[in-house]
Each structure stands twice: as structure tokens, then as C-alpha cells.
Image 1 (cartoon, protein in one colour):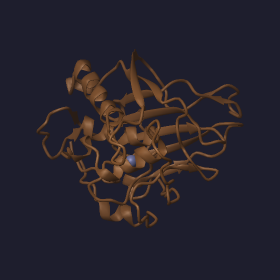
Image 2 (cartoon, helix red, strand yellow; image 1 turned 120 degrees about the vertical axis):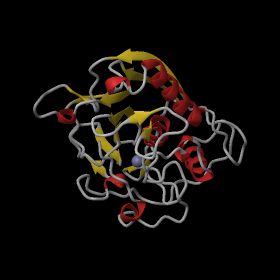
Image 3 (tube, rainbow, N blue to C red; image 1 turned 135 degrees about the vertical axis):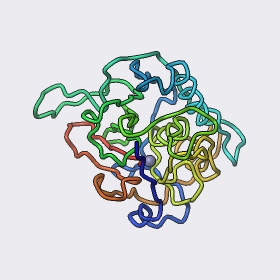
Length: 269
Ligand SMILES: [Zn+2]
């Protein structure tokens, strides 16, 4: 299988200049955020294709990736934010996005739980072949997130949990840690080396761990208990077309298709 190399330089051209690096997605001028900081998720029971990774290894990698954000210490306070993640088990046939209660108009949308979905078939991946993973976030008019789903493109890419991945293979923890940043409301960062930087070449491991820029974003959106108020995000979200050559930063505002909820779809190529 041919796996395209992914270049950051093209992607950055579509981003607004942001002096502070990290950015939060915004809705109505408010940074997207979860109110309840205990977040639940389920993993795709179908796992990865052709035995790339056992489900035990998948769960271990996912747990580790979520824990990276959960146990991050804020630079200013030295304490955790209180954002925590709970693995609720396995689920088959989960769909990304919100439940539509009145198809086809879909004016009534509801959160249906948070999932990490492994898409094994190309026919079921509609986000572009150059996209490694995509996170869909549902938020209400007050920018409160109610639903987040991560999709992994296992149809076009080979995933591994190896600590020494070949340069043509995608490390699942590297990808998940980045996508979990979107899950909690972070946009891409202009800081090279940050987990929330938009590029992710196959074989990369650096996004498994958070950079100071990532911590600054996390701790601004979710100030630790008893911590002084942190400065808010300074930049608006950047948006690019998902089918452009810069699929690394593709972000699509899916439109105000609901009375209360709308979706953001966030690609990582
Ligand atoms: Zn991304």
C-alpha cells in the first residue's frame, strides 16, 4: 500500500497567524468546552483490519492517549485540570455525529455518546483518502460540547501501536492523542512540535506527549480547580476545505443543521 507523505507547509498556509500557538474552537465567540469534566467514551468493537492490532492493544493505546490529557499538569499551577476519561467498553456499528430525530430534515439532533470508530472499508470513509483521522464535535449555542467522535481511517492506512513504527505506518497513540485534543475543544496549533500541530507524517511518535503549548491550551479552557482565571484563546478557528491538498487541517463547520446542536468535523491527514 502506498501511504502518502504529509507535509505541514501547505497546511499552515491556510491557518491564521496566532501568536500564542494553541487555539480553541469557538462558537458564538465562546471557546468550545465540556461542562462536566468527566468524559465517557466507547471503542469500536470491530477493531483494526487484518489483525494490525488486537483489541487489547487498541484499548491500551486509547487508554494511554486519554490519560496523557487527563494527567497533564498545568504549567502555572502544577496541578491537573480535573478533565478525566472513562472507558465505557466496546460498541459495534457506532456512527459519528449526532442522532437525527426527524430525518431527512434533521432539525432535531441529539448527542449519542462519544466513540472511537475504526473505519476499515474505503467505501465507508467519505472524508478523503489523505485524511488519517477525523473528529466530529457537537456543540450547542453556548459552545458546550455534548458529543465527540473520533474516526480512524484504517481503510487507507496501516495502524500500529509499536514504539518503533516504520515510516510508512501510523502510530495509533500519536493519532489519538492529537484527536483527543479536538475532542476537548482544541483547534490546530501553529507551534511546530505541539501535539495539536496539524501535520502527522506516518511513523511519527512525537504527538504521544504534550508540549507546553498544548498544556497552555488545555489549562486555559479547563482551569484547574482553585486556579486563577487563565487568559482565553486569542485566535479564531481556521477553516479549510476537506478535499483540498491541505487535508491535514481540514475543518468543516457542518452547518447549523439543528436547533441546538451543530457539528464540527476536524480532519487530520
Ligand atoms: Zn487535527
